[in-house]
Length: 242
Ligand code: CA
Figure 1 (tube, rainbow, N blue to C red):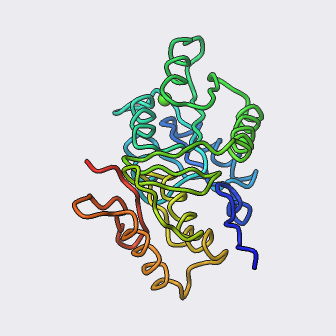
Figure 2 (cartoon, rainbow, N blue to C red):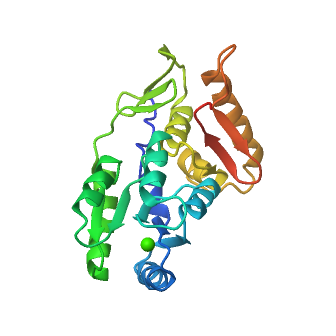
């Protein structure tokens, strides 16, 4: 009997739903026109007027792409970006920078941005960059994932905690990869059901809980901190221990 190969992540499950994009921009009129334009192009767009609001949005559910203005009231875009990357979050980020600020662009790329766009820009250009990022992400070679002392090799389909290899089923491997790619964000039950069973979670709630608990038991060891948190009413989140 040929073993069933797990679906490769990321993206196969994204074919079933529109790309979700988080727009972090404090200028309300610009944000509204971008939101409308992107929605017309089929993106599911959430708007956050500050880094703090963006963090709340990400805590409510993971996004495929982030468009990030650097000059924001309160915590600025660069700080937000650095924190995101520090958590192990690899969501592609397109930064919006002020005209002529070369240092801002360089710092942005050094801080983990994937691309940048200089304000003011044409909507067509933003759209082209966003699409290119989505494509690049889907075609990117699968690099080793690391969150805290967890490591996962997406090509060899192997995972380790504190260098101890984990005995995971193909579906558990998929779930762990999903959680690691969205470390620090909430992975909803819907997302889990779609990657694991290719369907929505209606009627699967208990099954998902059992599934997640089994993975939790496999990755935690005596004396270790549990890395998978339950976010009541929302889903699950993989976090670095504080
Ligand atoms: Ca701004």
